[in-house]
Amino acid sequence: MTAIHRFVEQARRGELARRVARVGSGWVALGDPQILPGYCLLYPDPVVPHLNALTGEARQRFLDDMARVGDVVLAETGAERLNYEILGNVEPALHAHIIPRYAWEPPEQRRQPVWLHDWSRARPFDAAVDADLLRRIAARLR
Image (tube, rainbow, N blue to C red):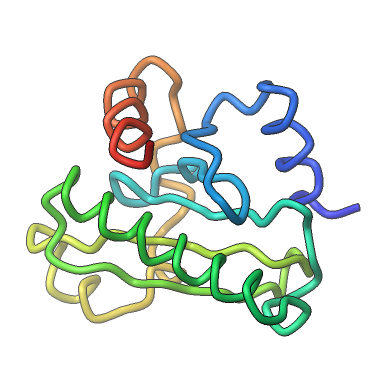
């Protein structure tokens, strides 16, 4: 069982503190840590190993939900652009990273993938600090 499986189970039970909303293909959650404000993940429900395991309508729904989350994150954060990533190398289960990128980021970081940032210095998800953004994103996704 991967961390993605555990997150989906926690989201189903209402125990994932960073859970934002249920969408057609799965669950939206804020990232932990918040490497950049508004960093979100989309977890499919049910969990599948990778994007190619989805077909037809299920695949389209996941990709549409990913873009829809991006639209909302852009609107709620004022980000300059978004990076979308589906990797699965560390956790071999489908999940999409929706990463806002900002004009205020240092120029050398703006050109790099977020994975090259210093994650040890990133602010951990904090239910109190992140509550307002979580609520705003959730409201727009409804």
